[in-house]
Amino acid sequence: MEKKKLDKKVIIENGGKTIKEFKDFISKGNVVDLAVGVIIGSAFGKIVTSIVNDILMPIIGAIIGGHDFSNLSIRIGDATIRYGAFIQNVIDFFIVALCIFIFVKIISKFNKKEEVKEEIKKDEQIILLEEIRDLLKKQNKK
Image (tube, one colour):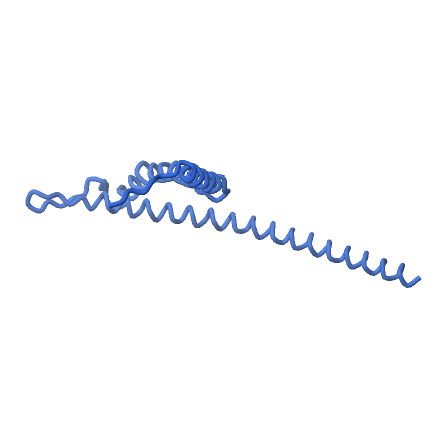
């Protein structure tokens, strides 16, 4: 087999292109927004988990007779099925989903208000441009 000779110039050019593409990818707003969202989502998840484990589950346990969900389990032979932890995780999920739903609804309302403001500005600009056009037409007729 014949070995191909590696041209250092080609390697440097290709590497430079790759680094430039990576730099462009990282500097895009979407990537940064996504990273911020993941970090905030992680912290938010901890808060919701604390609400579920430390506030809601004890209240629900007291209502249904003092049971602690996290300790509910079934033993089958040597295996232990901890269905109480599963119930807590399901409730945790629904609370996170509800909070995100509410948050998205609030943000959507703000975005709609911004869109309406932008439409009004565009309409005002169009009216102004039409007035300027009409004035220019009148001047050209004179």
